[in-house]
Length: 220
Image 1: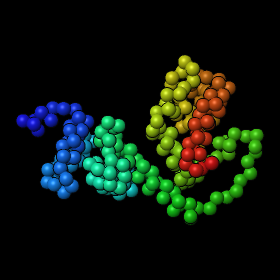
Image 2 (image 1 turned 180 degrees about the vertical axis):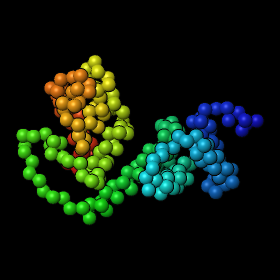
Image 3 (image 1 turned 135 degrees about the vertical axis):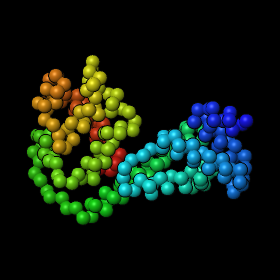
Image 4 (image 1 turned 180 degrees about the horizontal axis):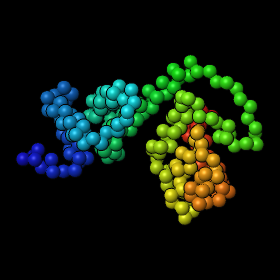
């Protein structure tokens, strides 16, 4: 009867109750193992766990499940999961994305050892992005930056937009100006806005956020 009632609850509440139940038993206890197995099964069936097609995804996922087992009931390798702060799925997705980012950075460092950069003269009066051409293989930094813009983890890029034009957001303009960038004339024609309006918004809102991201990643 208890299991049937549990199944009628929303996923997050089912998981929350299973966590509370699992914590009633010591490590290694059969009942705890059964609760944890049920949590994993429910999460996998829900398809709410972050997924992406990268060669290192399975490794990051394995690390995430290990972290789950070590910290769901008590603090093991990290901080103990707190049901009052987030759902189990949100907690795991946050950790999984960090591990994916670690793999991505390590891959970039590996590639950087074998990549030579040719110096280029840049006119200080020009927009730096005007001098960036699309290489045959996407540079690691550009790949990471594009991923940040496309996924917009905080939601900030898609919420900041030109006044009275919710369709012209920071996310939209950054995607058009990242190499291989669209010219301002084409962007102006697409949205029916003056180049001056687009460029001003881009410098004030988009570039500021792009620069902050670069600083956070150690690119600047």
